[in-house]
Figure: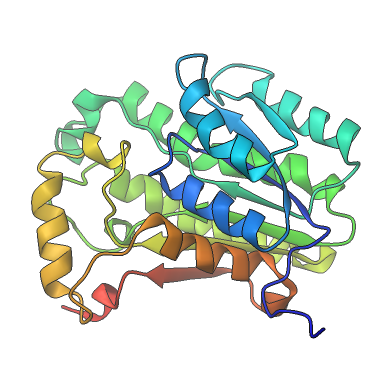
Length: 258
């Protein structure tokens, strides 16, 4: 039997950022599992656990534990559990983003120092922390994936503070790819078009953003979490072994349009 192009059999990976079955991270987890990977999955807190478990358990996730990157030690505990259970990881997905509502809904010029710092810590620096923790567990190489949005490079109405934060995340992807490339570790950012998720609902007038995206994209329809998952599984596989440092759009071609 020929080996499939996207083959993650025997691979082990961590997925951060599942909120519910409709989240981008859930679509990625489904794709990883369908390609044969064994997963470890985190949830934010006890309130979120049932929604995450509803995604993780049907996929046969080997690990399901708490991880709020704002709580000292919780992220490190996930990696320690993975090391004790598997000894290594082959890929991870970071799908975390947060900004305080008052800063997210206001002008960038009016953002507070504390709100900006918190948004940058959760949405960007936590990915850098994951890379630091993953590196010694990827002795045979691997893939680090995160999630961005085109509001990083163009001004998108009401995206506000998250624009500069995602720009920083994309820059971190490029620097991490350069630094970790000699170890065979590839780094990418997935850049979906707008998707109706719980996290996106915090953006003011998000329905208008969805409508514009569907109208502007050459394919004239929105992407969904499983579209993003298909890309994520490919990038985590050996089929993408010579690709790194990329910001990859999965938006029906919307990024082409002025």
